[in-house]
Image 1 (cartoon, rainbow, N blue to C red):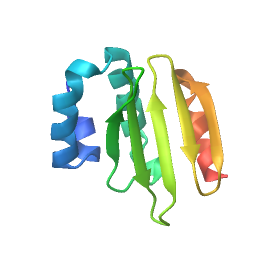
Image 2: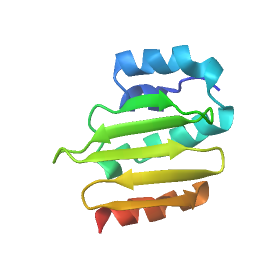
Image 3: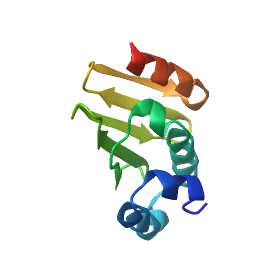
Length: 107
């Protein structure tokens, strides 16, 4: 899997380029999960997201929302692990339950 147009629309050009450079280190399942997160970028209030590769070969996306709260989602091939600072919400859900993460954030 490559960096998709949707990912490019959510990430800055510099971050998208960094993701391209990191592709050999990232599992394809994690990239597919990142695509799902990017579909909900507006719901998450992403502002200038950054990406990292974890020790598990997953992509972790981090950003501050418009209130400067730290947020992060690690994209596993089968689930998301997330932490949102304001309000403090954290957990792990299967990929198909991304809507539950969105709902948690909006509470």
